[in-house]
Length: 108
Image 1: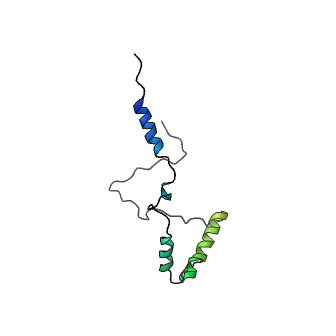
Image 2 (image 1 turned 90 degrees about the horizontal axis):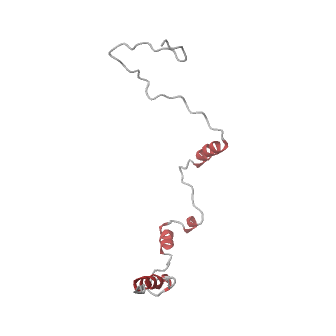
């Protein structure tokens, strides 16, 4: 007996290929760029020139930040200060046994 023709496979192939018609945004009634976001941003600016070139904040610390970034990029960083997690020594109710010196011989 001869195997039936793969009709479901052909139907699936035609269904997949039917979605490849082109750009869906070119049809009437679909989304298109209206530049509304740009218009809204321009309305929020107090001066339209600010859209082309911004203004520095009156309390800007940009110069100090630029010096720090320059030192970081050139490898001339300041060393970090020595710090510990706590300056408070732990208090133990029992005396602590003396520890052997580092690098010393161990009597085993």
